[in-house]
Each structure stands twice: as C-alpha cells, then as structure tokens.
Amino acid sequence: MKGRIPICSLLFFTPLKKNVEVGVEMEITRRFHSASKKYILVDADSSGLSSKTGRKSCKSEKQLENEKSCTFSFLINSCGLSPELAVSVSERVLFENTEKPNFVVTMLKNYGFSQKQIARIVCKRPKILMCKKKTLLPKLEFFQSVGFPMAQLANVIARDPTLLSRSLENQLIPSYNFLKSMLLTDDRVAIAMQQSRRISRQHPTKNIAPNVAVLRELEVPESCIMLLLTHHPETLVEETDVFKEAVKKVLEMGFDPLRSTFVLALHVVAEKTNRRIWDQCYETYKSWGWSKDDVYLAFRRHPNCMILSQNKISRTMDFLVNNMGWDSRIVLSCPAVLLLNLEKRIIPRCSVIQVLSSSGLISKEVKLSVLLLPSEVRFLEKFVTKYEEEVPQLFDVYKGRIGLKDL
Image 1 (cartoon, rainbow, N blue to C red):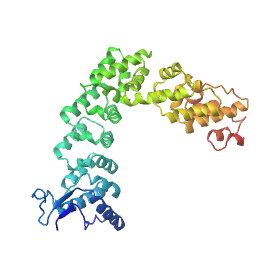
Image 2 (image 1 turned 90 degrees about the horizontal axis):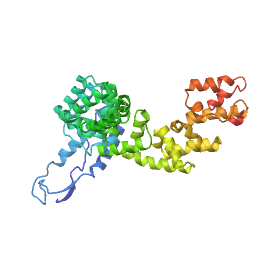
Image 3 (image 1 turned 135 degrees about the vertical axis):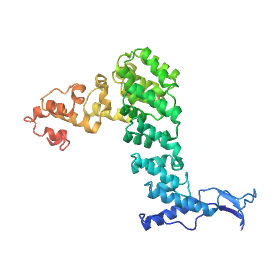
Image 4 (image 1 turned 45 degrees about the horizontal axis):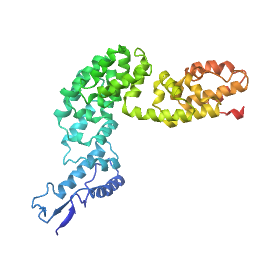
C-alpha cells in the first residue's frame, strides 16, 4: 500500500543486555516507539522506491530499527545513560554496530575517564562515539606526553568535548605551549582551560598574545597577568580592540596597573557578560541609597562587587540595614563582605554581635572587616570564647541552636 510511512515505525525492540531490568526495558520500548515518530517521513511503495524520485531510500525500515536498538542498548549499558537521556541522545547519533563506539569508550576509560565523565561527554557531543582512532588518540597521547595531569584533562574534556575535535597542530599544541610558557605548570594550564572554553579554540596569536602585550606595555606584573590568565582567561580572549578600550576605561577609573585589583577590574569591564551584570548591580546599589561615587568607590576597593546577582546584593543589604540597623553605606568600608555567604557567615556572626552589644559587652559599631573577614578560629577567639563566662550560651547562638529571644 502506497503512502507516507515513518522510516523508523517500530513493531519490535531488540532486548537490552541482561543487566537492564525487564520493567526498565518495557519502559524504554514504549519511549522508543514514541521517539521514532519524530523521525523523517518518506514516500515509499512496496518496492522500497520513493514515489517522488523513483530512488531507493538510503536505509530500510528494518536497518533503522536495528540501529536504534543497537544505539539504545549501547548508550545505556556502555555509556551509563538513563533511558530518558538515551532517547534524547539517540536522536543525534545512530550506529548499526558497536565497533567504533566500543573503541571510543574503552579508550577514554584507559586514559582515566570515569563513567560519569564519559556519560557527560556523550550527552554533550554524541557523535564523538563515531570518531576515528586517528582523530582522538593523538590528542590524548599529546597531553599525556607533556605530563598534563590526566585527571584534570578528563574534567576539561567532560566540560567541553569539542576539545577533541580541534586541530592538534593548529590549535591545541600552540595554545598549550603558550599557556605553559606563561603559567609554568600544567596544573595552572588545566585550571585556565577549565575556566574558558574559548582559550583553546583559537590560536594564541589572534587575541591572547596581543592582549598580554598590552598589559606588559603598562608594566603590569607577571604575577597579575598570571592571575588573570589562570582564573579569568576569558578576558584575554576578547578582541584586542575591545580589550584596549577596557584597559583605557579601567585606567580612567583610577586603578593602578601595578596592583592585582587592576586585572580584576579589567575582568569585570572587558567581558561582554560582565558588562551587562554591571548595569544591574549599579541600579541595585542605587536603590539602597548609594550615589554614583559610592558605587565607583566600592568597585575600586573590590571589583567583584560589580558582578554579583541583584538578589545576592539585596538580601545582604536587607539584613545589614533592616536587621542590624546599619546604614547601607557601611558596606563601602569593606565591599568584600557582599561576596560572603549570608546564612553561613554573615547572620551567625552578626547574631553574636547583637547579643554582646545588647549585653553592653561591646559596641554595636564593629568594623565589618573585623567582624566578617577573619577566619572562624579568629572570630571565635575574639567574640565568643572571650565572653563565654558572661554569656554561656553564646556559642549556641553562633551555631543557630537558639535564637536571641531564647536568652
């Protein structure tokens, strides 16, 4: 009978390996039938010829059934995917036998990749299962030969599997050599590669090297350049014209190129995503009564205060202003407190101060830098242990076991 029929309309499903439970297999079969309906429809007659072109379809219905079955089983049993993910991934890759996929998975395991990392890689880039040996192996061999920590490499590739599809000679080797010459250790190179996917996607001579040269012309210390390259490499991948404009802006704001805050400010100003967040932060601070000069002062003292979420800023400000009774501008003395955890650090320590001040043991006007920045050990020595005789339950207040009303 002529008409439009689904290529992959499945009547049967090849059983999975024994380690998949029968109930799961039945569920997969149901989803498998459902997923098959998404595939392309073709016009065909009983001879398998297209009614429009007179040519045979590329693959028979039975072939595609077998490929789907084979792919499904492999994704679950060998790659560790859930049935739900297997449905999604099988829409992007199909194979009729497991020779290539088996080689790829075995190779990754031999180089120290965990099952979870392999699953992440396959989900992000399913077609990696069909890559040839000469495409993948030389890249892994290169990183191993230079002493790159393979556990770190597995993390990098799990985050960005496209690394294995890039040219070894034109991208990976030049990028690695440049980063190693700057950062000196493979651990730092690995951190940089994890921080930015773009850093190994382009030849270093395109943007990174010219941007580093701009910083060196300003006599920015190598330690500061290393800080930027290790933790914020995305900044140095920006187009050089954009980068130079950001440098100019940061200099106009009064930052000293010889200090680390210069490169931290550059990270905030240069990157496109951060520039959008800046505008949101600016409006949030103004809503709490800050002037433009206040915002810029806070930025000069701690640049990262301008790349926080609006919710993070407002929740911290709300507690300090409405719970502690302080003016919002108290934060200007130590903007770094805005980056601290509200529930785990700010509230417990401020609760201790409320008890001590209400008891007349200390003044409530404690410097934020003294209250919130020291380590827990130092804080406990200065504000809890010291007053345990006067307020025996102070440590319980700090730990949140009792409230202020319970004292």
